[in-house]
Image (cartoon, protein in one colour):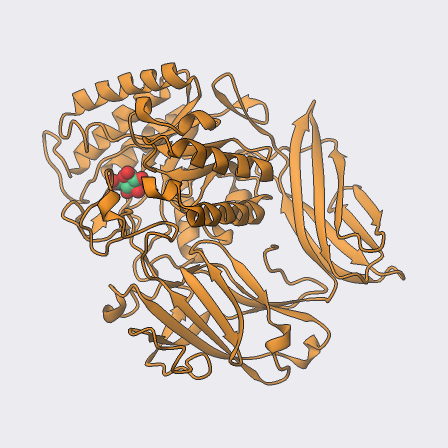
Length: 584
Ligand code: BDP
């Protein structure tokens, strides 16, 4: 699936803005024909979660309906017309003029449907969208699994049992776009650097048959590949070299642009699409993470898509602000905890040189999931959707296939091995991990992965308020983990809650001082180990969670408040990171 783009051959319309909306408290919207005419009781903003827009929706985790009438111009007469949603949480069904056009399961990845047949040109067309945000054990991330929880949050309200708020609704952009009837369906670019030469392999998927050739040109270079198409040929593969290459890296995130054109027998352009890409290599060798052959240490954060009022709504200003703060901190990387982030976030990362570990929404799998064929099938599909969407982002340097699953049962072994094998079959280039929060002695899954990711809260959930003991424990557990697994380690989470404005001397739990001391001391322990490849603080900013006695409205482990103001720990860690970079 290609990100929608306005090109010489494609139109693009945004449907973001106000939509008519109604909660479907009794799940009788379909039987009441709401897909034809919604009994809307208000207007609501797309793209933003519904919860924080109205008080009565704050704790509404059911079904919501959206409706809007959209004019489609006559000029699109011979084109295919598509409706694309960047992400809606969780199960989305779409009708156009009362006709069902498609359904998609999953809250954090885009989907699109060809709506050409349901559309009538030159007049308003009714788009009706039903989003079911119910929390259940067979959704990803799974919720309502209390009986099996050993780690995690028992007795939360709502009962999701993962530590972020289960915002419902259409959270990312909605677009209508057109393509010609024969069109470029997919572009996949794989890059490597060998002896200073950029190696690029391409795979272009084509739909429709009225094309004679495909032309690939790297803009601002002389690189051009002209491929004549045989009849029925729908996939083109090949490669080219880039001499005098500018490798993509945080200090110089140079992006090339590949213009792909489909041509008819007379050489006229049928379809055109430009895909940006960076040329870089990522490898794990001798317990080191190598970017373009050089060791790199990942300093940064786990974070969330979360902001007041917007919930999980994609917002360009929030993305700009967060990247600005990451740079201010001297961070070079993040993990998209705990689900794939928006296209727009990842494009910004490509342009600014942020290194990203892309994570699935598999948070807190419990043992019964491992033997459940439906879960396995869904998880496999999500991995495919994520890797297909994100393959071309140079910023994504690794995949994380799960966060804090219950990996201490033997059934975890084949389950995670199968997920690993599936991801590896789709992407042979990026290292793959899963995130562990248990004693590695008891773990059945980590051995299958390329590097080890650990979430560790010594000095907080364990050794609480005893920071010296917590630090000693971290030191010892890291060594033990490496001794057992002999794989490079990133600590993907460490940190403490701090309520901004609370100060104590000596440092006590929930004070800014305790958080600052814990984060800086533990960072230095992690960074001092020869086998570590990164340290990600949990978390970048405070974020909304379900309600539970251990959360003061929001999770307060942010180094920034939810409104993005720095706490003491942000200043202290920044000093260390800037000094390391020689900027202070
Ligand atoms: C880890 C989870 C993360 C939580 C964090 C915490 O991966 O989602 O928010 O702990 O407790 O276990 O703050």
